[in-house]
Image 1 (tube, rainbow, N blue to C red):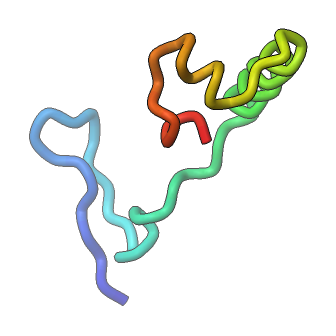
Image 2 (image 1 turned 180 degrees about the vertical axis):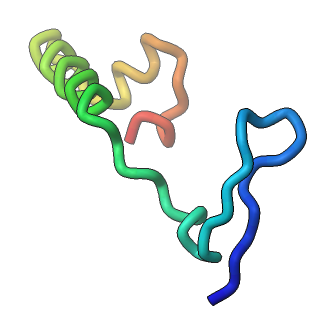
Length: 65
C-alpha cells in the first residue's frame, strides 16, 4: 500500500494516510450532522428548495446539492 503525507507548509499538521483515503470526504462529526439537520428543518419550514436557499446565501447550485 502506498503512503502519502497530507498537510505541509502552512498546515496545522502532517499525517501519513494510505493513498486513496484522502480522496474521499471525511465522515461528518455529530455536530456537523446536527447543524445540517437544523438547516434542513429551517429550510423546509420556510418552504425553500436547496437551490432557492443557495441563492439566498449566495452559494452555487452545486454547493448546496
